[in-house]
Structure formats: C-alpha cells, structure tokens
Image (cartoon, rainbow, N blue to C red):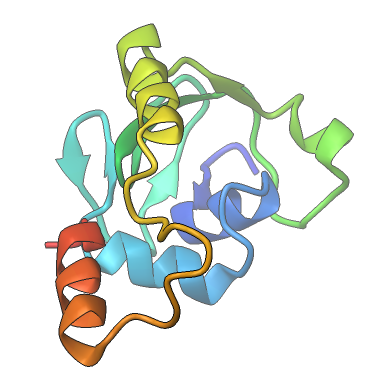
Length: 127
C-alpha cells in the first residue's frame, strides 16, 4: 500500500462517510478537497495530505496519518486520521446549535404549505 489508497475508500474506512457510495457522490460534487484542490473518487491519497470535507455549515479538515482500505472500528480508525479543523469552524457549529429558529412553538399545529416551503427555503444550505 505504499502507493496510496483511493480517496473514497479512505473516507469510508475512517468513518467520515457512512457508505462508500456517499463518499464518492460528495467527492463528485466537489465537497471534498485534497490540499485545496477538487479531486475524483479514484484519486490516491498519501500520508500527510490534508483533506477538506464540506458538511454545511462547516468545513472540516483532516490530516491523513495512515492508509487503510477496509472499514474498521471507530477506535482503530482514529489512528489513521487527525481532525485539524480550525476552532473558527467549530464555533460556527456551536452558534448553529444555539440558533434554532426552525422550531415551531408547541400547540400551533402543523405548518401550512406556504410556511413549510418558506421554512425549507430558509433551512436549505446546499448550493
């Protein structure tokens, strides 16, 4: 394995994505960057590279510590990846948790079709 591992396999193996198919789809949508550049799912990842994974509302940054092709337990997977996400990105996540404006007051009933569409449009973070 000195030459590298496919990025979609690696992301799946270290448990960043639940399925390899999901990892491949996110890579194709350019939500995964290696050293700041968009890649294809077949790109080989090397030890020491930085991987940016965009999961709205934040961008997580990981460093490759080791190569692995098969999915393993979370404890073992932690040996192959280091989360180096900047604190500013994690603060965005904390702010989002406190700003829950999409919750309706109890007892107001179901939202109308217009309210539901407005809420979906407001909460839609995907481009």
